Image (cartoon, rainbow, N blue to C red; front, top):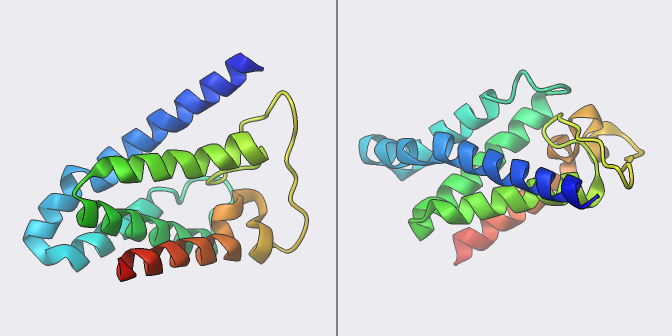
Length: 152
């Protein structure tokens, strides 16, 4: 059990670090200098969402939510001038879903040795096979974070 938690936490942390470096590291700041902050946020958010198209269960709602998540993380990085806030948020989000709820994240499932999370209900509420990132609650949560960032 401990090996599973440590291994999954390590995977989640490395995946978040890789994705943040790839999508919102140097490219975000280079695009900001080239096209302005709004352009950089939009482009990196769309590329982030598009990079998940091959994941199982990907659909329009997943794409929209991933673009939202990518945009919020990009804006947060530009506000804080620190990519580590996004690495932490990204790893925390994915870790909570995989380790805490044991449900798919971005369409990927890592079977837990201690429990299996199962979501029942319509896809707009559960995200279907893609997981919560393709569901309305994710939209609400990340829009709430966007509003908080905008106000602060």
